[in-house]
Every structure is written in C-alpha cells, then in structure tokens.
Length: 467
Image (cartoon, rainbow, N blue to C red; front, side):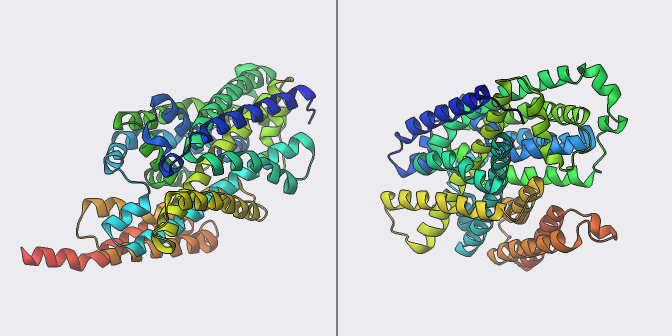
C-alpha cells in the first residue's frame, strides 16, 4: 500500500489528540464513581456520541465491509439489525434500568436471586467482553500492519498501547470523552471514503450495472444469520456492561433514552456507508482471497491525506470499542468478583488499583487469544453468545415474575452456556439435519428459557395451590 508521510502525519495527529483528551479526562478521576460511572452527569451529546462510537467498532466495520464484499447489500444486516434493537430498548428497558440505579447486571442478578448467579454471570460477561477486545485489537493490528508492513504479531502490541493507557488511568470518564472524538473521526472518514470510492468506481449507475444483480438483494446470507444477529444485539444491548455504564453515566432518564435512540437511527446511515464501501471494493478488486482485507482496497484508492484519515477512522472505531469493553471488564471484575468475593472491605483507593490492574490483564489475555482466532465476526458472536444468550431470560423474566427461583436461574444459565458451546463447536453448519441450521444463540436462549421455566414450575404450582 502506497502510504506517504502525509497519511502518517494524520495518524500521528489522531494519536496526539486522543492522548491529550484522555489525559485531561483522566486528571479529573478522583473517586471510584468517576472511574466506573463517569460522574453520572453526562449530557445528551457525550452520551449519544459515545454510545454510538462504543458500538460501531473496528471489527464490525472491517467485518461488515468484508461481508458486503462477498455477498453485497445482505452484508449490511450486520449493522441494520441494531436499528430496531436500540430504538425499542430506548423506549422500554433504558428508563427502568436508570431508575434501578445499578452499577452492573450481575449486581442486579444477586439482588433478585443469589450471589452464585451473580458470580456465574460476571465470569461469562468477562469472557464476552474479552472476546470483543480480542476482535478490536486484531483489527487495529491489521490496519497498522497494512500501513507499515510490520507483521501483525508485533503491530497488535502497538495498537493497544494508547487506549490501554487512558482506559487504565481514566476509566469511564476518559473513555466517554475519547469516544466522542473517535465518533467524529469515524463518521467524517467514512463519509469522505464512500464519496471518493463511489466516484473512483464510476458513479452509482456504473456500480449498480457492474456488480452481480444478487448484490442488491437482502437474502444472500439466508435469514437465520440476520435473525440470530437481531436476537444477539437485543440481548446484548439489554445486558452488556458498557451500555449499563452509559445509562448510569447519563444525567437523567431522558438523556439515557436519547443516547439509545440516536445510535439506532445513526445505524441506518452507517450501515449504508459500510455496504457501499464493500461493494466498491469488490468492483475495484474482485477475487480477494481474504475478504476481511477489503478495507485495504478502499484505503488504497483514496488520495493522500484521506488515506490516512480512513486509517485513523478504523483505529478510532477500534479504540472506542476496546476502551469501552476494557473499562466494562474492569468494572465487572472489581465490583462483582474482587469486592464481592475476595476483599469486601476494599476502600476506594484499593478498588481503583485493582480496576487498573485488571484493565491491563484483560488486554493481555485478549492479545493472546487473537493469535488463535482470526474470523472477526465469529469472535464477536461466540463471545457475546456465551453471556447474553444465557442470561437474558433469567434477568428479564426474573424481574417480572417472582415465582422464578434462584436455582432455576443458575441451572438456566449453565445449561444455556453448555448447549451453546456444543451447538457452536459440533452442530451449527456441521450437521446436514435441520438442527444444524439453528444458530447457537437460539440454542442458548431456548435451552435457557426451557430450564428456567421447568425448574421454577413447582414453585408456581405451589403458589396457585395456596390461593
């Protein structure tokens, strides 16, 4: 790739700016609440923009461009499924969670059930958060490697250094304000890239007539994958710590709802841009052996300066999600495991120290995992499936119905986890039977729901008999 000093200068300015923002925000962190909940006074702009940046992600960007490179507009489902999820949750659960005034979902599970449920959910969530960081660091590594020619095994270390520094020091406060800057870089870089890419490809008329007609259909990946992704994001946005923290950081209920609504609507524009970039990459360079490198085709056709801007955009998407998930993981470990099991009497200073150490530990683990798992979308789906598909029904139904028992919740989560892994590793797309077409996230949630109801049923029967 022909990268000039101008592009490196753009990247350097991006890093300098984000370091300055991260440092200024970090200097304001004096209490535990600042690190975990960002002062709880965030207005609409930082709440909405940081929430959007937190979900776009480098893995979603690179993976979705690669998918649309392969199948056309159907690949945009990866982004479009987020639209109804954000809007519906913004109108329903967000206000409820804000009024509960919780710090973590596992904490809420203990309030409803028992400490065992809290610990199991916390461990599963840590696994899911680590998988997300793994996917993001892989993307950052790929971008830097394509720029410099340095092997990804080394660039992944460089890619993580900046966001680990400000996340470990400044917590959620630093994450939110750097996310606002990252959001601006992502959207500006993608808008510039798609306009110039469409022009390079000969305009929309030429693009429409030159690619296969199937590229403009929405059924090229079947319907099971989009349905599974829809369920996955709905579960995820309800349960993931990084969203719970932003709800908690918002100054009031209306602000938290606005953040969800804005992100959902923004996904319509974002998804169309990403899809067009993938299709343009196919038209410019068909036959790539690795579709995930389609983003480098787009970078390669851009003029000086804009090339560096798009690289900065990919890095911004990567860093915003990585920092959010790192802070979420540190919060889960510190609040739900360390202070609940290991050292319940820990003061604020000790808690902040543990949170910062766990931030570094999570990123080290994610780097090690990245050397073994390469498919970005699969990494994200697998990690999230372990947590959200198994915890959703015990949480939501448990809040609604008092006859759901703690034993049922634990059994439900464990069964869903085991069955999802069996389905993912041995059945899904590996069996010719109909069962092989069922996505693991439906297996996880379905088994979880079945066990939850079955184990709780005797309690419900006793209640009716006592009436």
